[in-house]
Length: 85
Image (tube, rainbow, N blue to C red; front, side, top):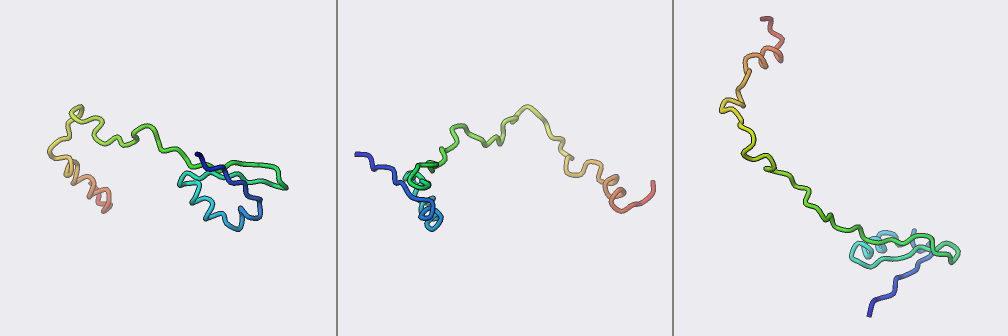
C-alpha cells in the first residue's frame, strides 16, 4: 500500500524545509498548502536518462602530433617574455 502524500502548511514548510526536502529527495514527495489550499507539490528530480560523459567520443578519429606539448615553444616563450624578434 502506497504511503499518502503529506500536506504541510506554509509555516511548517518554512520551519522544516531542510527535513522535508531531504525526505522528498528520498522519494517522499509533499504538498505545500496556503490557508488549506494546496499550492505546490515537491518531488525528487529524476535521474538523467542519458549518459552525459563523452570522454573518448572521437577516439581514433584524430592524431595528436608527437611534439604537441612543445610545438611553437620558442614563440610562446617570446610572447610571454616580451622579447623582440
